[in-house]
Amino acid sequence: MANKSLFASMLGRLPKANAVNEAGGRAYKLEPKHALAQVAATGTFGNAFYSTAETQLEEVLKLIDQVDDNQYLAKLALYAREKAFMKDMPAALLVALSVRDTELMHRVFDRVVDNGRVLRTVFQMIRSGQFKSKAGKGRVGLSSSVQRAFQRWLNTASVGKLLSASIGNDPSLRDILRMARPTPKDNARRAMFGWLTDKSIEKWAPATEADLPVEVQSLIAYRNSESEEAQALIAGGLDNVRWDLLSDAAKGPTVWTALARKMGPQALRMNLNTLLRHDVLATSAMVDYVADRIADESEIRRSKQFPYQYFAAYLNADDNVPQKIKTALHKAAEIACGNVPELPGPVVIGFDTSGSMSSAVTGHRGRGATSKMRCIDVAALFAAAILRRNPDSVVIPFDTSAYDAKMDPNDSILSIAERLAKYGGGGTDCSLPLVAANQKHAKRKFAGIVLVSDNESWVGTGRHGSTGVMTAWEAFVANQRKLAGKEANPKLVCIDLQPYQTVQACERVDIMNIGGFSDAVFNVISAFLADNNQRFVAEVEAIEL
Image (cartoon, rainbow, N blue to C red; front, side, top):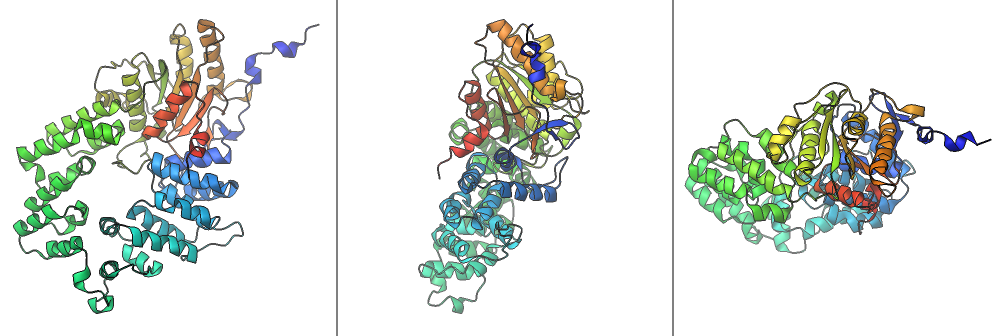
């Protein structure tokens, strides 16, 4: 008699869900390294739909304790800073290293702390005492080893970098200098430190005011200027001083116009409302200048900007920002689409439009992101960018229904993203785009499915204890092999936009879960679909220390 178990339904072999997600649905728990990478690429210690800043910090500390591989922590800190463009998470991982492996901490310190904003964040986290060693010891001050890292940074940073680091408080650069106590390498640095810490000039000895760098002397003259014209003249010559170090003392539109001409294309994009408020955009000449700089094709391609940056600026722009500049943002987004890699074939793009996706995105605080961007906006832009580069793909918005989205790939990317973001708003069933693909597009061959979501599926379940996504994915694979033969090798990519630790599809050779939404995510997706199993954790581990 035949062994019936040999002929059991493949659904019976589906892995059973082993976790419950934040929304109460079936899910799969990520292993600690992967979960930490997920949080590192998306977390900002801000409030999300299903979590608070406090619970995020608790989860991060637990995950760090579960990962014994200090080299992985160091590589993840670099990945989060250099690939995912995060600020808070790389700082947290660096502080964790400072109590676990000081040698590794020193090796990656200068790459993670690449500006004053991150330096202040590291300092603040150390002072918090939240990061403890395996022995349970916390720290609220700078150890001698960490102090050396801070001293090295302060003594080797350029004048411009130090001036940039002086922007911001709680903590201020003055606080850091007073605790790090770097020994100045020369009188110029001694005078600089004295000026930054507000010490009286006689305490700078043997340095004097004449030892201050030229940029600092010019900055002092700028701040002391009595007329708008004199201030604008000085501002125009301050090439190594950031515009935002000058803005607090700017006396009027003439000075602000000079500051606008000091800004790079990305700073202009990020500060359109500020320029509008200070009457910089009152003349056609400056409107033309700003529009041309924002849509500079060579700059966009060189800097590898992703369309997300321009969509954020577009959403955040005041109604009174001139239309020519808004048109430039559209044009820039189109150019930036060229930085999105072409996939090896058409894909089904499942785009989550459920209620939790209306929360502010927490995962990207760099390159012009703003809190006005919601998860649904990011997901819509992801779907639009993939569609533009892969026009034979199919976009399926979903919540507790799968919607029939008629999208013209030749439409502008911002228009596509805006229309997509208007769908849905209900509960979440992440299996629906896969089910729709199996039913409505059963005769089409696809390279795979890309699911863009916060992974908080709670409506609908799979068979035999699996999630609905796993059940529908098995049916999709079977259908693709029916169309193209056994050599068909479709892949499922699940992009998670929030720092949670459960997923709807378990990791295996044909399934990848990845967190974040930087341009690095596109490269990982493209490589995975092209049969280069470049998984999320492997991508992190490939970072060279």
